[in-house]
Image 1 (cartoon, helix red, strand yellow):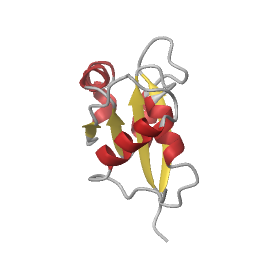
Image 2 (image 1 turned 90 degrees about the vertical axis):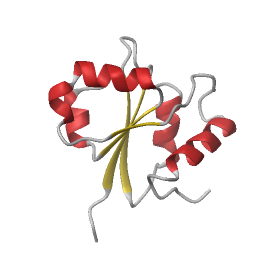
Image 3 (image 1 turned 60 degrees about the vertical axis):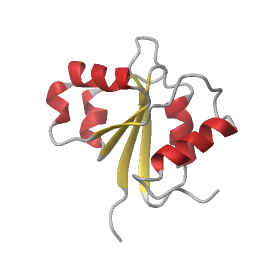
Image 4 (image 1 turned 135 degrees about the vertical axis):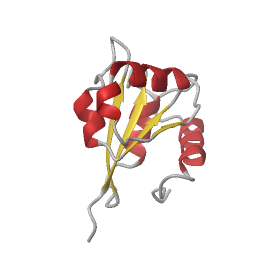
Length: 114
């Protein structure tokens, strides 16, 4: 069996968007998943080690991508960062957020069954 692909989801606080994305893939056989935040008060703050661990990095906003490129330039060698363009207007695990995540992630990953 092939090794699970490692997905890293990043937003500002790691309380709503990236955490919801991580929970969406909980229990997946196909993916190992982490979520992190780039803001000072993030629930779990992004590190260079997280970026080194990840096969694919998904950010919610262009600002998150810019911040990662600025703060972790050395850790991005060969890493693709995908911006999902998901606004910070949702509640944790809100059905509308889950639906938007599913739509935006569909071109990149196999989605878990509903």
